Amino acid sequence: MSEHMLEWLPAYHDHELPPAKRNQVESHLRDCSSCRAELQTLTGLSALLKTDPAPQFTPPERFATQVQLLLPRRAPSHPQRLPRWVLGAPLALVVVGAFLQAALWVTWLVLAAGSTFSGLASWLPTDSNLDIFGTLSVLNIALLTGAIVLWCTWMAFWWAWKYNQNLEPVFNQLEKEV
Amino acid sequence: MTSPHTAPAMDDRELIASAQLGDRQAFGELVCRHQKSVVSVIYRMCGDPRLAEDAAQEAFVRVWQHLNSYKPQYAFRSWLYRIAANAALDALRRERPSAEIETLPLADPTPGPEQTAETDQRAAKVRQAVARLSEPLRVVLVLREYEELSYQEIAAALEIPLGTVMSRLNTARIQLRRELDGLLEAP
Image (cartoon, rainbow over all chains, first blue to last red; front, top):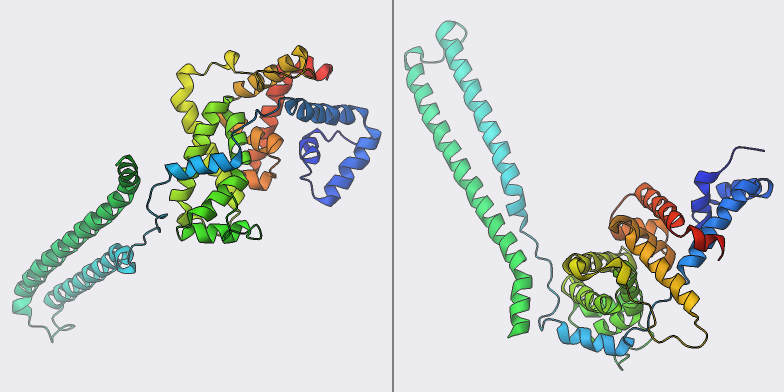
């Protein structure tokens, strides 16, 4: 006799096995009294659970009327969607910020190289490198500040939207009580 | 509750579409169709008919409020059972201090002549054994044994993997077999 198939029996009992496996289990059950007994216990348990009948509940029509009395007057709310630009804003900020940072660092490195190897970057005015770097740094700080402000605005917008969504059931409840 | 403009020919999908537009009659028809399943699941979860009906009403109000977030590509039944299971768990958490497993009422307090004391006692034991299961095990067992949902439907309703459904069902059955050993030997 092949090995027992105890692990497959619950799924077999629940009609959840694919046909090939089902046939395999059935052919095993023909020869294995131990697995047959296990299957019988599973069937017996299902039958036993169903010996506890459900009580008589309120008739459906009356129940539906009761539910309708509890419904808020407002029609089901449509899930609000945030505009695409709101969802894309943080990503765009990260991309723009990364690009600006990279551009500034490359510029700074070119300027630094220009000072050290004036032959390689002779087109740059070497004596004004420091001023240009200072200007770029100020520009960088201004851009970062702008990015942070935009980020905070986005967060505030998102929070306000979320809070409004959360408040909806409260408004419905209040409406019902009034 | 079948009104003239929600003719019996309307299937669930059409009723849902109408209800999503605010048609209360269509929603009433949906409630009528699914009341028995929803109340039954909650009753099997909490063991108290009154509590089950209250929680089922609450579940249907939630269904109405969130009807527009329901996507027709998913089975309505699974979505409904998810809301029903959550309503049952909420009700249990609220009522837990007063809900004693040993005092769960019998299904029919006025048994007819065909119902013997023995069968009532057996039913009560079964109910108590089911009530002793932990909530995650109980909900899977109820959906399978009483509502006869497939593993896939249970997984969708509870948003758990298929393997978890199988292992919870298996554990629940092992525990029940242990609890109801005497009754299983002499069914």
